[in-house]
Amino acid sequence: MSTYTQIYYHITFSTKDREPLIRPERRDEFLRYVWGIIKNLNCHLYRINAVEDHLHIFTSLHPIVCLAHLVKTIKVSSTKWIKEGDVFPGFSYWQDGYGAFTHSTQERDMLIEYVKNQQEHHKTESYIDEFKRLLKEAGMEFEERFLE
Image (cartoon, rainbow, N blue to C red):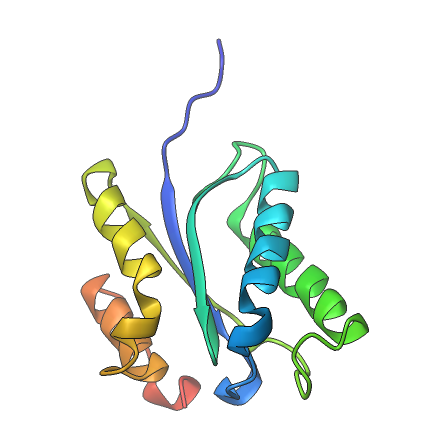
């Protein structure tokens, strides 16, 4: 019997202290690099995008890859690449932790568009407000002090 999975993850995390360091000039190059990490882990990327202080990934995982491993690999590898290439001057590292939310097949197209439109979306909502909203929509309890 083969293994079959269909689990969509919307993953998001920010730069340390939500510093606005992801510059538009090299954002596409950065996103391609992260896409390569995801591809090398045999995961399927549906959409990726970033604004100045955070990243959104909409993906499904290969059955042998766990979520924590994927996020850790993205953070560690991209941090090294950013620092060695001086891609985003002043970047030190990513925030501790991350948000990961599962979604249904029926929500796939909506999530692709949501991630695609991050630049427009963040003209009216900050990352921290967005993150709190995502937690609430997922029915997750959280303590404000851990988000500030």
